[in-house]
Amino acid sequence: MQIAQAGAVAAALAFQFNGTFAWLANAVINPIAFLPLTLIGVEMAIERIASGRRGGAFWITIGLAAALYAGFPEVAYLDGLLILAWTLVRMMALPPAQRVRFLLRVSLAGVAALLLAAPILVAFFDYLPLGFAGDHQGDGYASAHLPATVLIATLIPYIFGGIFQDGTLMGFWGAVGGYAGITLIMLALCGIVGQRYRGLRIMLALWVFTTVSLSYGLPGASILTSIIPGLKLAAFYRYLPPSWEFSLCVLAALALNDIARADVQKRLRYAYAVTLILICAGFVITHGAGIRPHGRYVLWAVIFAALVLVALAIILLRRRPSSNRVALALSIVLACESAMYFAAPVMSNPSRGTVDLGGIRFLQANLGMQRFVTLGPLAPNYGSYFGIASINHNDLPIPRLWTDFVARKLDANADPIGFTGLVRKDPAGPSSQDSLLKNLPNYLAIGVRYVLAPVNAPLPEETKARGIKEVAADTNMRIYDLGNPRPYFDAPACSLEAATRGELRANCAQRATLTRLELYMPGWHAFINGQEAAINQVDEIFQQIDLPAGSSRVQFVFRPPHIEWAFVAFAIGLLMMLGELAVSVRSKRSAMRA
Image (cartoon, rainbow, N blue to C red; front, side):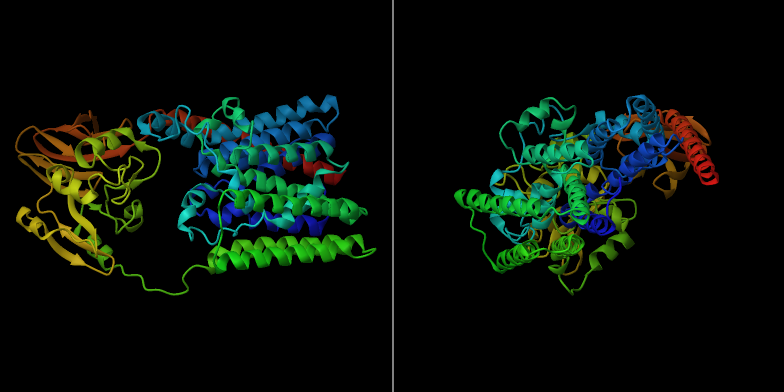
């Protein structure tokens, strides 16, 4: 595909500053960059096939494999559907005799990508049956979507204020996955019409209409969740936006290319009028639902949107303008609007503050191989960040063995996805503090030594009688010592010297059993003096091995089941990719010599 430089740069900037990057800063965004990379590979393969040259599919392999290694399968899969649609539509632009060759080349590149990604795919699919996946099972998200009453935010992103600023719209901010913007929508509408790449334009327009309809629950769209495999297992309304944002950017680039090559002023004005109608319809729907955005942030959002509309009107209503100047002016407006929306969340962050890590430093110095539980001050998963072991979690999938244990033995009122110390299944039920004190022996039995409580919600004084005492505090938390937790490694009648959680030396007067407070799971292997030993499941969730009398060097290693075959597949995929690269380089050199 050949697009005028200004339009290509502006559309690329619009995607660089897209709504998903601006609003979702977690693992969701990791695979997004590999969508355009893979499509570059598709276009290179088309160009090579059309010119009778070999190779060109190297970047397809790199893009698809990298998207899978990026670690968020839902986005990789949904983006993959767009890649499939793009590939099939672009294939039809080739003469019939070349289509089979193109399809074969792309398919081999896809197979190589899957083989390269085999280690992470095998590990994931081995683990998935053991995990609690929340709504990512059964009919899961079949009927889930954002309400159509908030569609206006795709055009004016901050019409509802800053992220999580309005407490009445927490559900919206917790589920939305991105936005577009006024200029991008207008240019995309203009880009739908055009003769060059006609099939691609229609496909992209249909993709945007279908995916936005799915995301916002427009009538009839939900039937696709029962037709497209796996769709109802993903929160598609949140993870589809990168694909429709990219589609809008490509349509916008095509529109800017058309403007630079021909006089399409009338088409632009129609697109502007339709955009105005969409904005007005969005306001009417939102107002009809009783949603009344308010506040300074909203006011500035409306003023900025009005300025964008005025700027577009001035560009479009000038008499006999130069096509190149119109394309350049619209490119500038598109890039500036996208950048401003992207910067808004960053600019609203605190400009200064003091980070108090006193409690963290205490835990790093004193926790050792024991664990802590938080009642709120330290969010789950930060234990890994700081190198301190926590029993809390907020993620999916989570081992079902663990979530069931939490519900039975630790906190029956904890949310199975977010065992955070704050989220409760029943807000009127027992608090996390109540559950802790009720099930204190069970917490000690899994190696919990410290409890982190909010500064303004300390444990009650009567807990001192149970051996619980405050040992440290900072501006964020109070830290309590539970007393005498079970050790991470335990073997009666043995002397144990642990180097890490996976390696220790044991000296036993007689045969003994070693209990390790690590979650039992297929894939763990134990070695005693270099010889593999069987691991048994004990105390519902932990590991136990038999130790011989005398001195032993014990190691625990985790290898996902079948990972050896995955490495073989990786090697084959690597050879296929390198072979494709060699063919591409040789073909390019031959073309240059010719």
